[in-house]
Amino acid sequence: MKLVTIPISKLHTNNGQIEGVGKNPRFIRDEAYEKIKKSIIDDPEMLELREIIAYDNNGEYVVILGNQRYRALKELGYKDAIVKILPPDTPKDKIRAFIIKDNTHYGNHDFDALANEWDAELLDDWGLDVPGFTEPLETKEKEATFLIEVKCNNAAEQEKTYNELLNKGYSVITK
Image 1 (tube, one colour):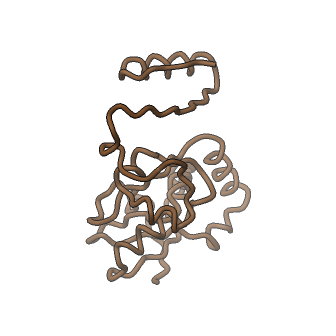
Image 2 (tube, one colour):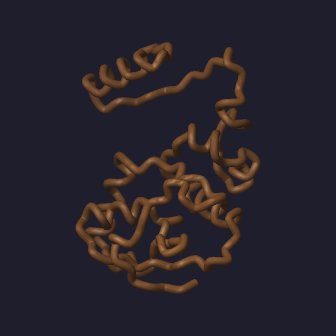
């Protein structure tokens, strides 16, 4: 792998633009993200030890590993990032495995994206624990019921989320 310094402006998040590789199924937000930003501020030299991994998708550098670091660097005003570029002949199934394996024990995931764009057996093989997850959402029976817990930071956020879910046709139970 080639290690280079690339302008942040030349890096792009993985939105599914690499044929055969789903978009990054990881949410980037909240407390964990703020901790990464603080870590970069406190110990910027760690960026040399934990570089971003990108794939050269016909001249577009797509971040495969290190999405939160990439986003934090942008937000913190960094102009460049230390990046390892995956070889162009890296198999797509290997890239997909890297994406999941890099974050199996940390962070939150977009379960809709995982259910619809990722193979459940592979996710399990790579160590990602997704309880009750065996097939894409659109193939599940329409009569099935699922319970999802949503934690809100305050009453205003709870009310907003409650109304959004109701407007989308979900049944909502509050505690």
